[in-house]
View 1: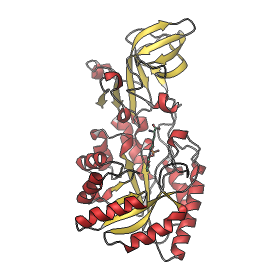
View 2: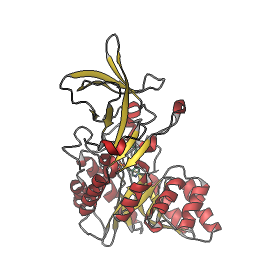
View 3: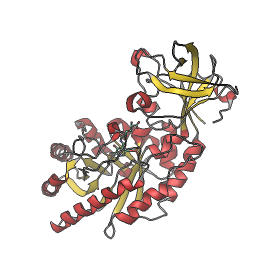
View 4: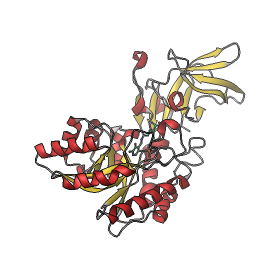
Length: 381
Ligand code: LLP
């Protein structure tokens, strides 16, 4: 990748570099995949990146917002998302968050348990309101992705088991302050094999048949997010396969007349527009290895240490034709603070700028102040 040096000469490293042109191109591709079909809706999963400049662009492109906390709901509203286009998921919604969402008039609560349903009913009753809810169902489907980002297996904490759905819907139907509107699912993240979503469609078809046999219908189906992006070769595949993704649901999901279909994508919208930029502090010649010691660590980009995730690493400063092999590491006092081992790069020296590509999603937003480090900065271009 190329960064104009004049833009970054005064910026402290590490920082996140966001390219809004890439974001806009991605958003155009994502919305084009819906082909103006009025029953298809795209929500952006704010958890992937809540930087306000990006949220503003995403809201303007016409997406709704998928939020998992009161903070995200507030950030979405502040950035210009219409409250009715906001959905609120999460297995542990606190009372104040439910109250905030109710006052704001969000579009839908994605309810994950009966105890949560009861609290929403009570809070809406206090406010003399009726709120729309969907049930998040745990479909018990393997997303075949990283274990820590699989959400749709019955061993995971998310959603209501399929067997408990009917009693839950019946219970909601008896309540005065909630209105049952549909079903919500999310099986996992970073899914590149689109066939993974076929069993999800089949499970939804079965569940809808069962509900209808009991006299209940759904106004909307929300299939969650999960579309992956190419971490290995971002320049070859900068835009995720939105068309292939939407087509799977067009083909395998049996929607009823008038039914709305919601997607909630995070990673595929913002991953490629962001890179984390760090500086080489030291080239350390170890006994067995060369270590490239950076001024960024897992406090700035946790995905490699936490999920064993891979980000393409580039030296933006060196044109050296000689290469060397490095373990690329951070300054944090833990041996897990390794970005990647055995990386071949043009020979590096102190002061070189190193880019971690495809870091726009779950990068800056997951940064921490462990070791009392400063949070990474950012530059939106
Ligand atoms: N909807 C729900 C209910 C979710 O839990 C998630 C992500 C999404 C939508 C958006 O999924 P996406 O389109 O981004 O795959 N920190 C991890 C990813 C965690 C994803 C959590 N849920 C990572 O760095 O890979």
